[in-house]
Image 1 (cartoon, rainbow, N blue to C red):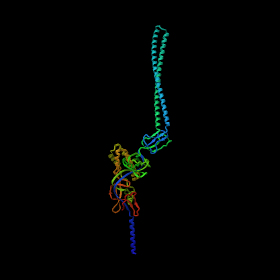
Image 2 (image 1 turned 60 degrees about the vertical axis):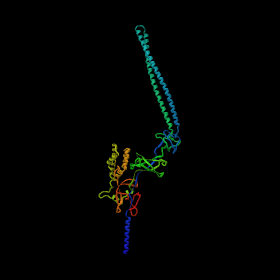
Image 3 (image 1 turned 180 degrees about the vertical axis):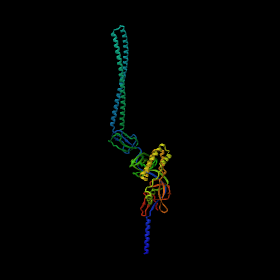
Image 4 (image 1 turned 135 degrees about the vertical axis):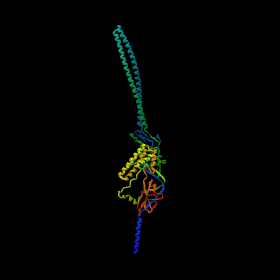
Length: 531
């Protein structure tokens, strides 16, 4: 009986301790290693030709003939479509007839001016003749009056001399009036001549307009390239009103393409002109195309309530595999480092169970609350650093000071409204927005320097945050190690400083004895085993 009891007790103890051992937490670890790490900004976009020309029509009419189709190669000035010219040819003929009529009217007006000029000369001669007659009759009247006073002539002779003088005087006045009338007729004829000349200029302009409209019935290629779209057929009527209808779309050169991507405001501060980029398309999932960032547009584009900015990636397309309109999944290389310490991102996400309980438990005498948001570099220090490194002008300094002051006020308001977590979120949002605002105020040289400052761990956005990772202490329990991080490629993160060394193992996951994860990480590359 005693032996049975001893055996039973031994079996119980074995089962208990085995269960205790099986139920003990095990940890999955990975070694800290050195290597290259690259940080990317990803975005979706559309492939487009670098230069795309929409060919339209400036006149309305019916398409009579087409000389180009899809994928046709065309040269600049080549005829690609013909609109029925009948109406426009008639308008040209009408304008020519109107011009001839105006030229005939000009000849008549010139003749009228000549006639009026001759009449003026004749009137002037009549005035001179009448004035001479007045002077002659005036002398006769004087002599007759003197002779009549001597009783040498009769009263009727003197009266005849008076009548002759009065008649000559009246004829002189009439001649002068006729001269004025002739002069007025000359001015009128000259005005009609100018009007006739204006009519000719108008008729010439109408003829030129009619000829231009006739020429516009010939649709020619504005650039040398490839027709990628044809929007009309023979017999179709096109109406040119406020907006010219598009007949063809011509890509100037399909061997040079660009990817128009939408990068979110949170990432746009890390993107710079000249950075290398890669992308894939659904048509060739196994091919990776190389490109380079050539432009960052400042105009914001809101996509599903997210503010984005158009980043243009230029790529060569010698084999014409890339076609306009293809969807591209692009990655822009924003930072790259060689031979740096790196750890899996799973190590940054891991926290042991007891640490989570301690973080969730309220401190004695205080209410439970999340840890305070890290203190970023003050607005004054950021401004001082920008002023020193970028050599800001007074106008730039004032504008950036307003941006930083407004951001600081918004973060404080967010902290009052929603606490530290809300302040963190608002800070992340404003950092991305402020990058774009500050970039827009800088010169090209200053912008490059600013982008270099942003990529450094001690960037103007503030000191690098401190993270905790966990390692196994001598007694087999997790122990925290503080580190600061640098760039990340989504799977691994650079370790800039802290208590980690190459070859040291960090915890990425905890496992219970029943092989179910107590705290798991979604990404666990290069797992080394259990501890």
